[in-house]
Length: 584
Image (tube, rainbow, N blue to C red; front, top):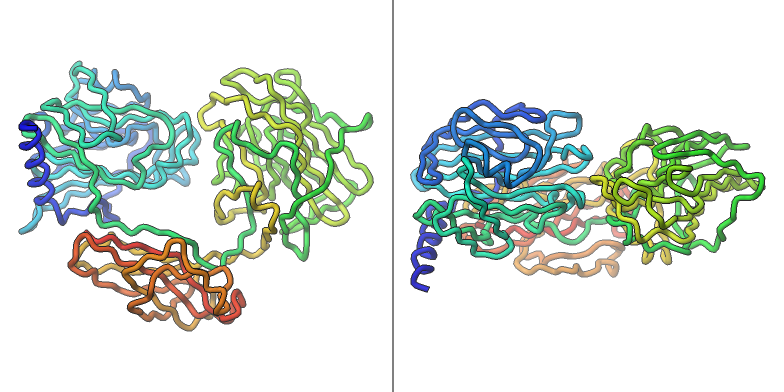
């Protein structure tokens, strides 16, 4: 206990000194322009940062989620390994070492900003990896921010998207003086974490992290080591609940592991009506390929085109042919995705052509087992994966899957019919684990979120050709006490004359239904103690809000707009989800 008292005193003193430094910031500074496997040039901190009792005035930044201390000597490395980190001839701080690829289309960038001292706050530097895509799949954005604070404190903020990493993505969090330093494995899940004068600490793992959307402070312990705590007093804006009224043109369920698929011996239908799909339960039975069915001869990562006897109508158009991919998806034309064995929602929702999917890394044909068949019987075109094997590691599995898509050429209806599905095989390919089952029309679609088909199908789900995104509220900066932020409302229907932000101190979560006043599908998320009126500019509306000087308090916010022309509710009004402004 006597040893712990000085440590606690240091934590309290350091925390007080940086109270007004944000836990994270959207003011990122300068885009370093670094690309894959690149170290930045020297970045001047503007102060002396002390690590391991050594002072540094410059750093280099690596695209792969770490910095090296000093103006030269840094080496970029993608192969995450504690031994490699410990053996390097330079000191490094690794807020989230992972193989990233900035600079490619769709990827974010790496940024640096030096912030000078003020009369009340020490100088600090901010290094940001902003929505940088992981290298292995080029689909998972990674956001995190490192702050080096004059006095030797380190602050790390992890973005929410790090909770969505592929299960086999390796990562490391830590720091070391290098030069063959001794290993010091730790767990950031067990806090406070004391390294007792040791400047080295590291945790390794793979896949989604438990630290997503959280902030950690590494306080100097006075002996060259750290005391790590979670900062639970950060100024944050946390969304909750749902806005209304959203209509989407896509749906999917993302089964993140092979065993999690629960659709064996079930069926559902996409009823084609007036250019839309309505998702309904189905009583359609599996139709085994007849003696005259065509074996499409698909092997691993292959696709082919089948011609239809008449046009199939679907949301967005008609087609006289279907492109069939061995990995479980069918589209109106090739999406050039036959080699894509990593089922991710972002790719699925943005393919160029309308796609019906039971997408997984599969191996039909002689290499794996089972085949993909096609035939027309009457007015129905059947595409069947019959006893098709998936991957286990780099080898074919032993548990087959059987499923079938039935396209009614007369009505445009599509039935998904499942036999026995593989709930055993585990793909060892990075990002190759799991399934995506659903439909997405041509081109970019908004993400409606994964839907549980087991519970959704007994009800009805309408997919509209024209999307109406639900009303959303956000703010442009963290709610730091005595600062002014902008409360921003998005997805406002055209022609809406006015809107308002409702503020309160009581959070209703789950929300209170507003159906009784003619706002079906909308909910109330606070008591509305105050109202800030705004006038939309197009699809957005903003209002400035001065954050009260009450650190530790929370204010609840929710947007409402009057949009009678949209015809989405009887009252003509719409509401967003809630936003909790946690003041620091």
